[in-house]
Image (cartoon, rainbow over all chains, first blue to last red; front, side, top):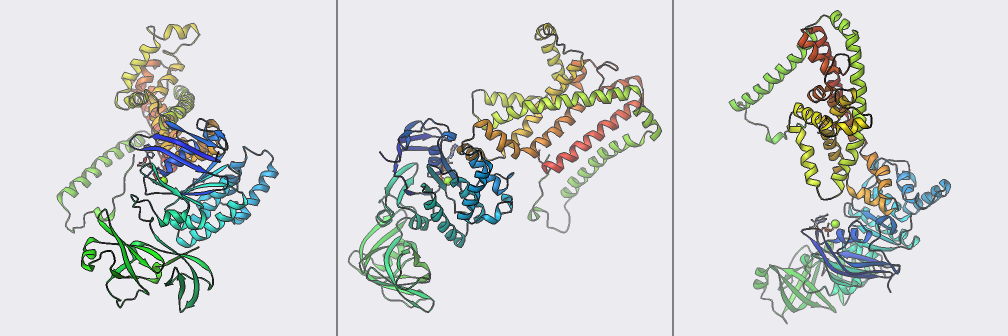
Length: 353
Length: 274
Ligand SMILES: Nc1ncnc2c1ncn2[C@@H]1O[C@H](COP(=O)(O)OP(=O)(O)O)[C@@H](O)[C@H]1O
Ligand SMILES: [Mg+2]
């Protein structure tokens, strides 16, 4: 039996329902849940933690059926996008509050708080009120508060969504460190596929209250289920090695292609490059443009997706998807077997690790 | 009451002011001025010496003391009862919830006098009266009756203010607290109540003001008898009917002063939200 098992979970909140959700996670797994806004990801997390009671189905954690337990008996913690730090307590109090039900001894509580503050880099903030903190600092505190109780399961509901890219990246590193230190199993809802690459070993795709697909990140990103159209899915993922640093650009050799990226990386480093299908332009010949990447390939297939067209192109050893309008598809005269050029900017070839 | 600030774009940008604009502004000024001057007149009719002698008369001192005592008692009980009521209405769904909501809305619309009459019938000889009397409790025409009347006048308002305070607190705060092992009551005690602090303070102030100013229901249920169930509004009423203007006006000034203090601290603490 798995560490966490969700079986046939159904929840109706009037106007929206989760239907027959199945999910498994092993101890130490890091699961990311992705799916469009309003697909029921938050509802799902809040059902697992016990704020909603499912109509049907079972939730089993560590061989124990917790479906009918109140939230205070489940040992599951949650971090929300808007942190939910108690405004009337300072940072220390917020973190200590979580621990008070487990520990009575004041000295011990203080020691534990100090320790986690060290791990998350918030030592200096312990006596500030949440209102005086920056977004990133608030999330660190919220993470500390949730982790300090060493929950069986940590739920993260888009914890980084409100932060800027740089803060997000830093926080991701800190989170990684803290998770391994406190060896927690995590369910992380996110919109950002970089979270998936950087943190997760498994991905679950949810749409309209149903699980569409589950698996390891690579397989889900490379072969998104055919009826799934979320914009962040089906991004092109190329594995490669950094060859050089030319001017301000990183040169990567990936799957038989030479790709320029404006993200910095060290030569020799193994990296993953992501190029979003909508950021690729297809053309008949090589064109003069400021975009640094022009790659020749062969059209494999053409699919209509809602009002757009997805073109699959074989380039080197990689299959790359591009999204274009039906009009430009017609003008280019694309059909399987034809040669075409994919053009994209160096800034759109994102390096993820 | 909330006066929303008009965004700059919506303000008339023409230089020549329209007659409609002038009309609305004119009406705003005229009636606010009338209201203001009627309050002002209250202060200037009497000589200070007359006010002072009325203020320290035996009857006024009695009435002031009784008003403070009864209003404090009823404010305390109103707050104690409206916190759980408002919390239940805000957080739980249960059968009869919308019924409770509409019944609590009623007293805002119907006259206090009718409320007094209804209470008189309820606590009188017909229904609860005999049972309560068997327990040694007499409500009608007693000081307890004042508290009861004030309670029912102020309760719906207090529930409303506290309800909106609870509505403004994201239930996720409570859920986070639950996830750390705290029960429902502990969470309420350590998270919800402290977060509702300023709303609770504001509603206490408003409740106190409503209790001290309650007249119709108090008069009918407690009788309004001289130096027995005489609170400040009753003093005003009794002395008007005797033609004793000094006493009437002085109690009016006292009631006004209390109302101003209440509104002032309410605005300070709740930022004028109601
Ligand atoms: N308590 C509730 N009652 C009724 N509908 C709800 C409730 N909570 C969420 N919903 C609805 O359920 C849907 C899914 O919401 P949510 O789980 O927040 O989506 P996501 O987190 O994936 O963006 C939304 O359409 C939302 O309006
Ligand atoms: Mg959500």
